[in-house]
Length: 199
Image 1 (cartoon, rainbow, N blue to C red):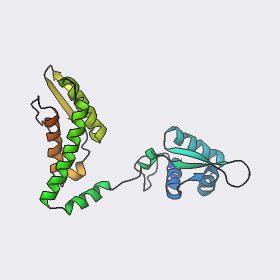
Image 2 (cartoon, helix red, strand yellow):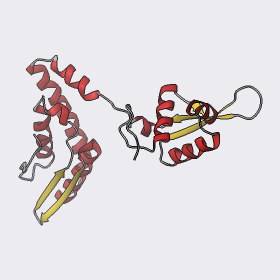
Image 3 (cartoon, rainbow, N blue to C red):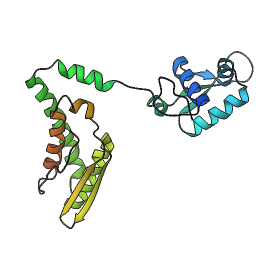
Image 4 (spheres, rainbow, N blue to C red):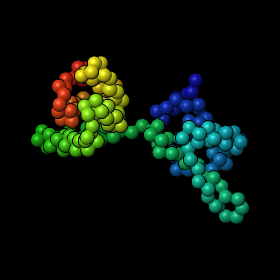
Protein backbone atom coordinates (compact mmCIF):
# COMPACT_ATOMS: atom_id res chain seq x y z
CA UNK A 1 0.00 0.00 0.00
CA UNK A 2 1.33 3.46 -0.89
CA UNK A 3 2.53 5.53 2.02
CA UNK A 4 0.75 8.84 2.42
CA UNK A 5 2.83 11.96 1.95
CA UNK A 6 1.54 15.51 2.10
CA UNK A 7 0.93 17.47 -1.06
CA UNK A 8 -0.79 14.96 -3.34
CA UNK A 9 -4.46 13.98 -3.46
CA UNK A 10 -3.99 10.68 -5.30
CA UNK A 11 -2.67 7.38 -3.93
CA UNK A 12 0.42 6.49 -5.95
CA UNK A 13 3.25 4.01 -5.77
CA UNK A 14 5.74 5.63 -3.30
CA UNK A 15 8.58 6.23 -5.77
CA UNK A 16 6.25 7.78 -8.35
CA UNK A 17 4.83 10.01 -5.64
CA UNK A 18 8.36 11.16 -4.76
CA UNK A 19 9.10 11.83 -8.42
CA UNK A 20 5.98 13.97 -8.84
CA UNK A 21 6.74 15.90 -5.66
CA UNK A 22 10.33 16.49 -6.81
CA UNK A 23 9.15 17.74 -10.21
CA UNK A 24 6.57 19.98 -8.55
CA UNK A 25 9.16 21.57 -6.25
CA UNK A 26 11.87 21.92 -8.89
CA UNK A 27 9.81 22.88 -11.92
CA UNK A 28 11.55 20.19 -13.98
CA UNK A 29 14.43 17.72 -13.68
CA UNK A 30 16.35 15.24 -15.81
CA UNK A 31 16.29 11.51 -15.11
CA UNK A 32 19.87 11.83 -13.87
CA UNK A 33 18.96 14.58 -11.42
CA UNK A 34 16.02 12.55 -10.14
CA UNK A 35 18.26 9.50 -9.84
CA UNK A 36 20.74 11.43 -7.71
CA UNK A 37 18.06 13.06 -5.58
CA UNK A 38 16.16 9.84 -4.85
CA UNK A 39 19.18 7.53 -4.63
CA UNK A 40 18.05 5.24 -7.44
CA UNK A 41 19.56 4.02 -10.68
CA UNK A 42 18.82 6.07 -13.78
CA UNK A 43 17.25 2.99 -15.37
CA UNK A 44 14.88 2.57 -12.43
CA UNK A 45 13.90 6.25 -12.57
CA UNK A 46 13.26 6.01 -16.32
CA UNK A 47 10.91 3.06 -15.82
CA UNK A 48 8.83 5.11 -13.38
CA UNK A 49 8.93 8.14 -15.69
CA UNK A 50 7.69 5.99 -18.58
CA UNK A 51 4.73 4.87 -16.48
CA UNK A 52 3.97 8.43 -15.34
CA UNK A 53 4.18 9.65 -18.94
CA UNK A 54 1.82 6.88 -20.08
CA UNK A 55 -0.63 7.94 -17.34
CA UNK A 56 -0.53 11.52 -18.58
CA UNK A 57 1.17 12.90 -15.46
CA UNK A 58 4.65 13.68 -16.83
CA UNK A 59 5.88 15.20 -20.08
CA UNK A 60 9.39 15.91 -21.30
CA UNK A 61 11.22 18.40 -23.44
CA UNK A 62 14.70 18.15 -24.93
CA UNK A 63 17.25 20.55 -23.53
CA UNK A 64 20.76 21.23 -24.79
CA UNK A 65 23.23 21.71 -21.96
CA UNK A 66 26.67 22.38 -23.38
CA UNK A 67 28.19 19.88 -25.79
CA UNK A 68 27.03 16.34 -26.39
CA UNK A 69 23.63 14.74 -26.57
CA UNK A 70 20.62 16.79 -25.46
CA UNK A 71 19.04 15.81 -22.16
CA UNK A 72 15.37 15.26 -21.45
CA UNK A 73 13.81 17.61 -18.92
CA UNK A 74 10.77 16.05 -17.24
CA UNK A 75 7.92 18.25 -16.02
CA UNK A 76 4.42 17.82 -14.66
CA UNK A 77 1.50 17.93 -17.07
CA UNK A 78 -1.56 20.11 -16.32
CA UNK A 79 -3.33 16.86 -15.36
CA UNK A 80 -0.68 16.19 -12.71
CA UNK A 81 -0.99 19.73 -11.38
CA UNK A 82 -4.62 18.92 -10.60
CA UNK A 83 -3.44 16.22 -8.16
CA UNK A 84 -2.06 18.85 -5.81
CA UNK A 85 -4.49 20.40 -3.31
CA UNK A 86 -6.12 23.66 -4.35
CA UNK A 87 -7.94 26.07 -2.03
CA UNK A 88 -9.88 28.11 -4.59
CA UNK A 89 -13.12 27.53 -2.66
CA UNK A 90 -11.58 29.03 0.49
CA UNK A 91 -10.52 32.16 -1.38
CA UNK A 92 -13.90 32.37 -3.14
CA UNK A 93 -15.78 32.11 0.15
CA UNK A 94 -13.55 34.77 1.69
CA UNK A 95 -14.04 37.19 -1.20
CA UNK A 96 -17.80 36.62 -1.31
CA UNK A 97 -17.89 37.21 2.45
CA UNK A 98 -16.75 40.80 1.93
CA UNK A 99 -19.88 41.62 -0.09
CA UNK A 100 -23.20 42.83 1.24
CA UNK A 101 -26.43 41.01 0.34
CA UNK A 102 -27.22 43.23 -2.65
CA UNK A 103 -23.74 42.86 -4.14
CA UNK A 104 -23.83 39.12 -3.53
CA UNK A 105 -27.19 38.86 -5.27
CA UNK A 106 -25.89 40.79 -8.29
CA UNK A 107 -22.86 38.52 -8.65
CA UNK A 108 -24.91 35.32 -8.57
CA UNK A 109 -27.41 36.90 -10.97
CA UNK A 110 -24.64 37.80 -13.42
CA UNK A 111 -23.31 34.24 -13.23
CA UNK A 112 -26.81 32.89 -13.78
CA UNK A 113 -27.44 35.12 -16.81
CA UNK A 114 -24.13 34.10 -18.41
CA UNK A 115 -24.95 30.41 -18.00
CA UNK A 116 -28.45 30.96 -19.39
CA UNK A 117 -27.01 32.67 -22.49
CA UNK A 118 -24.60 29.77 -23.03
CA UNK A 119 -27.35 27.22 -22.42
CA UNK A 120 -29.84 28.85 -24.79
CA UNK A 121 -27.24 28.84 -27.54
CA UNK A 122 -26.53 25.16 -27.00
CA UNK A 123 -30.19 24.13 -26.76
CA UNK A 124 -31.40 26.23 -29.68
CA UNK A 125 -33.33 24.22 -32.28
CA UNK A 126 -33.56 21.05 -30.18
CA UNK A 127 -36.74 19.26 -29.16
CA UNK A 128 -37.47 18.77 -25.46
CA UNK A 129 -35.84 15.35 -25.18
CA UNK A 130 -32.71 16.62 -26.91
CA UNK A 131 -32.70 19.71 -24.69
CA UNK A 132 -32.73 17.61 -21.52
CA UNK A 133 -29.87 15.46 -22.78
CA UNK A 134 -27.82 18.51 -23.83
CA UNK A 135 -28.52 20.29 -20.53
CA UNK A 136 -27.27 17.23 -18.65
CA UNK A 137 -24.10 17.30 -20.78
CA UNK A 138 -23.65 20.98 -20.00
CA UNK A 139 -24.00 20.39 -16.25
CA UNK A 140 -21.67 17.41 -16.47
CA UNK A 141 -19.02 19.60 -18.10
CA UNK A 142 -19.36 21.99 -15.14
CA UNK A 143 -18.44 19.21 -12.72
CA UNK A 144 -21.87 18.03 -11.54
CA UNK A 145 -21.50 14.42 -12.77
CA UNK A 146 -24.89 14.82 -14.42
CA UNK A 147 -26.96 12.10 -16.06
CA UNK A 148 -30.37 12.38 -17.71
CA UNK A 149 -32.82 9.50 -17.24
CA UNK A 150 -36.15 9.20 -19.02
CA UNK A 151 -38.67 7.34 -16.86
CA UNK A 152 -41.67 7.84 -19.18
CA UNK A 153 -42.34 9.54 -22.53
CA UNK A 154 -42.88 12.91 -20.83
CA UNK A 155 -40.84 12.55 -17.65
CA UNK A 156 -37.12 13.05 -17.24
CA UNK A 157 -34.89 13.07 -14.19
CA UNK A 158 -31.54 14.85 -14.25
CA UNK A 159 -29.31 13.31 -11.61
CA UNK A 160 -26.49 15.49 -10.28
CA UNK A 161 -24.13 13.13 -8.46
CA UNK A 162 -21.78 15.91 -7.40
CA UNK A 163 -22.25 19.49 -6.27
CA UNK A 164 -19.51 21.46 -8.00
CA UNK A 165 -20.12 24.39 -5.64
CA UNK A 166 -20.70 22.49 -2.40
CA UNK A 167 -18.16 24.37 -0.27
CA UNK A 168 -19.56 27.69 -1.48
CA UNK A 169 -23.20 26.58 -1.25
CA UNK A 170 -22.77 25.67 2.43
CA UNK A 171 -22.27 29.36 3.12
CA UNK A 172 -24.12 31.02 0.26
CA UNK A 173 -27.46 29.35 -0.53
CA UNK A 174 -27.82 31.47 -3.67
CA UNK A 175 -25.49 29.00 -5.37
CA UNK A 176 -28.10 26.23 -4.96
CA UNK A 177 -31.10 28.24 -6.08
CA UNK A 178 -29.27 29.38 -9.21
CA UNK A 179 -28.95 25.77 -10.43
CA UNK A 180 -32.69 25.15 -10.18
CA UNK A 181 -33.44 28.48 -11.87
CA UNK A 182 -31.08 27.57 -14.72
CA UNK A 183 -32.96 24.34 -15.47
CA UNK A 184 -36.36 26.06 -15.26
CA UNK A 185 -35.27 28.86 -17.58
CA UNK A 186 -33.71 26.57 -20.18
CA UNK A 187 -36.72 24.20 -20.18
CA UNK A 188 -39.66 26.65 -20.11
CA UNK A 189 -41.99 24.06 -21.65
CA UNK A 190 -41.42 21.67 -18.73
CA UNK A 191 -42.60 21.57 -15.14
CA UNK A 192 -39.34 21.38 -13.19
CA UNK A 193 -39.21 20.14 -9.61
CA UNK A 194 -36.26 19.50 -7.33
CA UNK A 195 -36.71 16.02 -5.89
CA UNK A 196 -33.66 15.86 -3.64
CA UNK A 197 -30.61 17.94 -2.89
CA UNK A 198 -27.47 17.70 -0.76
CA UNK A 199 -27.95 20.82 1.36
